[in-house]
Image (tube, rainbow, N blue to C red; front, side, top):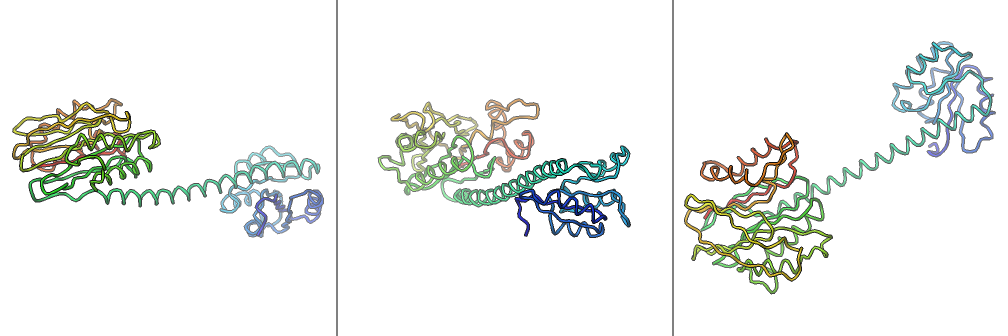
Length: 386
């Protein structure tokens, strides 16, 4: 196997005297390997085996046109980018132009001075070796990226596997739609029975995207779903938010924070307690009225030792709750303008009274309005029916 760092010179010329002359020119040059090919019909095969860093090619040889051989080099995968210096017995502008047009890199009237031969050989070889090294670096980078994409895809499937199955029976029914803008998202949501009398519903959105945001989202969701917040009553949204804020301060989370809407429904009392930490307000549709369930608390992790308050609202029979991330309404349109929250409210009110799947309709609407195949932010929308 040839040394990848060596300069390898292949001379294709039917005259052995030329071959010997060039061999002597390069004999004392360190790091230079030389191969002479007197038979142009064997040039491609020898080049494939020798892997030259530069080819010196005579243009006038019996049985084969030198210019035709130039075309063969450029059609051959192993020599497509190998520097090619054509040798001619005289300076002929027309022949020179044809040689360059077919892919030659240089032109010499043979035989030039030894210093010029060595200079041209080293110059073209250095450029070619640098090209090979760059191509290999790109290949390794592409391979690493493919492996990373595969790993991220597996991680994304794992994150999405944590999302709960829809509830179809009991006092609460749920449905949801989740489309990440990247393979790993910063959105996470869930719902679970805290005890026989209380069910928790939440949706959080971590700043940024990627592995760090996904890990923080999963960590926070695991704490909520396991009811493992020491010092907090999971039935009291304000105490839950206060404790989350203590646990997930952004200076301990690589500068990341998250918004979250967290609610607890008590069917027997038809009461919904909730707290909002910097999140878009949940929308409660009841008796033909659309109510925004918002609060004044900042995002979790931004301000230490901050108490959050719990608010409550009555839930009428047949009421409907929408909890979502800002990716469902902050949409860049084709003209560069942004679709805003007010536009979302104006659209979603009538949609709540229409039949069919509201979540699918809104996702399709967003896809049609957004520029590009990948959404600009994670699309998370949770539909809760009481």
